[in-house]
Image 1 (cartoon, rainbow, N blue to C red):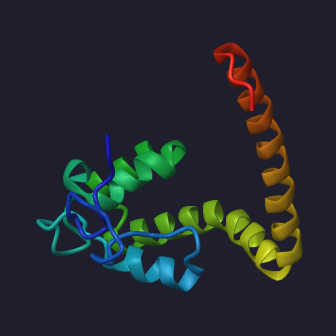
Image 2 (image 1 turned 180 degrees about the horizontal axis):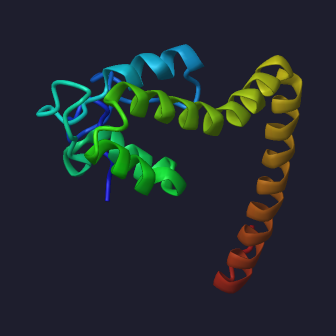
Length: 144
């Protein structure tokens, strides 16, 4: 299935401001996670939660499956506050995104490598395309 936007909206998108992007800084990720919809019936931390209706818990199930059962128990017993649950999700997401941010920064700072990769890829693609074109011409008996 699909993950809903952090705001609980069924759709996720840039214009809705309810998504986390691979390029988001740790601060931006926290801004999004902090605003994420949780169990709306749990208005006080000492109240038992309902993870099955919590959007943050759904993200834990996908990105933090190792701890999802423990988080569920903490929520339903009121041992884990919604804020603490969001903090943990924030840590998990940022740990997941950090290597991607590092790779992105590397290539942003080494644009010549990117250009070389594109150039080499184009040469390989052209060679394969030319071979295919020659085989097609041969099969179709086209002499050009």
